[in-house]
Image (tube, rainbow, N blue to C red; front, side):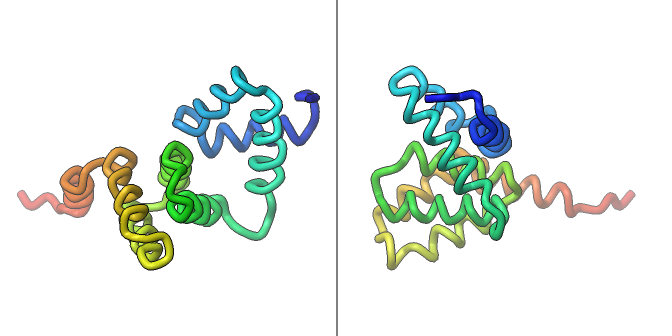
Amino acid sequence: MDNNNDAYRRGLELLDTLHGGHVGEAMVEEMKAICPDFATMTIEWAINGIMGRPGLDLATRELLLVASCVTSGNALPQLRAHMESAAKLGVSREKMIESLLTLLFYAGGPSVRNALIEVPSVYGTHETANAASQGSSRSVTS
């Protein structure tokens, strides 16, 4: 496949924005070694063609992809990649948890539980999150 076109270049730029330095980028690199055409299709079609469309912001698209991965029940690496991307785009820990809880009756308890288990590895533990928010909201009284 031709990797020297605008769709591929735009897809690479968006891949870096969404997944640079994270699991998603590693997954694309892994596929390049196994099936380069699959990686090219992912970059051109899924990332540039779908994620690059107007109409929804990237954080909303990532939450939709998280929901899709949870509902499928068998996409843990992809779930982790899209959770990391959502966090990178500013989706808070609380918003991620609420999004996952919304899926409880649609995706089932085991799938939602498995997704919730990923939250601390993406966002840090609850204690870490609480300490960070308390530290930023404390006022100095001396």
